[in-house]
Length: 221
Ligand code: C5P
Image (tube, rainbow, N blue to C red; front, side, top):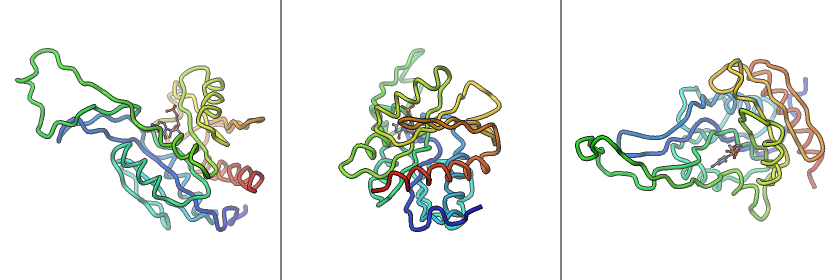
């Protein structure tokens, strides 16, 4: 096993959910555990990379030797990502697609709302697409959690977000994906794909880093 495949490479990884405030005590979020992103960060560090992990709120310990930046919202995650100098960007975070249009400064009281309440949402920035379409983008790797037509949706995202690689998993399978310690994925690129059978996120993180490095150094100018 090679220990230095990433030697000298600066990698930024996003992980976990984002949290979008409604008022001082409430928020919108999702079930992402951050386990896959943290495992990828730990593995990349062990493979010789200089790793920055931009993490939404999760309960995981920081991987040794990794620079961890804690954020809450998608807007904060984007700002943190834009502040990095990186060779490779791995977007593993489950970013909330929408956030409340207004954040109430005071706790919203049910007495003021009655039996029906509406929440107006606005679209969050696409962090990955923003980084991937900047003038001199890093090598960009996305994730796609799908419940159907996994291949079609993954290839569509590869194209639309201008990525080099996309890692797709079928989240309709309860044995893998969100919150699980195991995952099975297929990685797609412009003219190929590779599947990884269900295994621990630790093992998978090592195998994925090897594949990412192969593609990164093959495409590097
Ligand atoms: O379009 P979709 O959300 O399925 O795309 C998933 C990929 O895009 C993931 O890599 C995710 O981290 C990234 N993404 C992002 N910002 C968003 C939405 C998704 O970086 N607002």
